[in-house]
Image 1 (cartoon, one colour):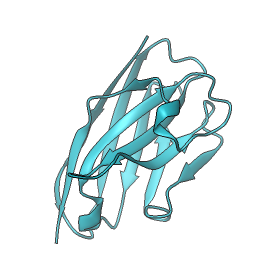
Image 2 (cartoon, helix red, strand yellow; image 1 turned 135 degrees about the vertical axis):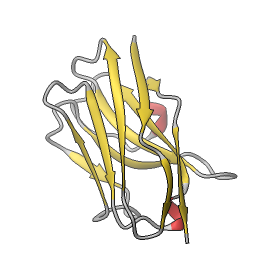
Image 3 (cartoon, one colour; image 1 turned 135 degrees about the horizontal axis):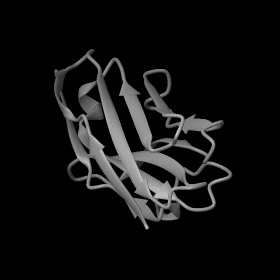
Image 4 (tube, helix red, strand yellow; image 1 turned 180 degrees about the horizontal axis):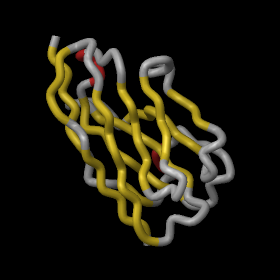
Length: 124
């Protein structure tokens, strides 16, 4: 079992930054991590994902160059640094984990475990 807890969401003005954190506990060895988001009335969408070692990280085109995914050395904390935020970034952000993470995946159904989500609201 893997437990994920997100934090760091909030209300910010457009152009500002936020850093989301995801605390992972349980059997996380060789688990790959991802970030997804879901805006009201929309489907959950991919934001960023890494393979289990963190050596490969991919981003959605909509956030490339603005968001950066990282982790601590122990792989117990995963971060999403969000810069130059836009109103369209407003959503609930979810951290997710999947087994067998030698590669990356942008597909939500590939992930076995999910956090409860943290709200990010960007005002114009």
